[in-house]
Length: 201
Image 1 (cartoon, rainbow, N blue to C red):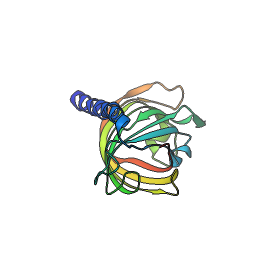
Image 2 (image 1 turned 45 degrees about the horizontal axis):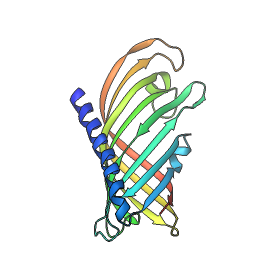
Image 3 (image 1 turned 90 degrees about the vertical axis):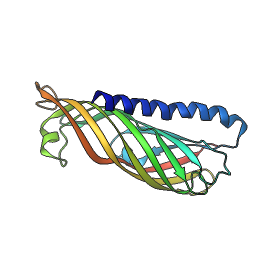
């Protein structure tokens, strides 16, 4: 389990490190940079922002971009229900024809620290317990981006993959005693976003 966690962390560092290398190359090439926010995440009170950088010259047949979203939720929903977390999910995306336009496929890694519980309409366990711990894993995604004009666009994306969750379990949402610890490997949707996109350059 520790090896899987190490490999995931190394992958995240590799993807993020490639961003800094690409920024140096961008000084002499025509690149684009966009920022975006996931509107679906905002409905859950997730404060989120993502940046995406074109890693190839704009004339490339298969442009490659680096997409790095960060999400933060410090809120409680009432009656001790919460989905508190801080998360990052860097992703490499491959486009056909032009970056930031139409269809793409991606490969991502993810890490999150979470404190969640008391949420109904999901399952009985998360309604009656609180979970606090870490999540990490990898996945693949596909999506479509439509630019309304030169600056503003809409993006939808769905991803599937695995997540390793390692958390402590508490008896109730606020003040219960610790019931135990749990580690699981889950094969789940790892990405869902409907985002508002703004092209900086």
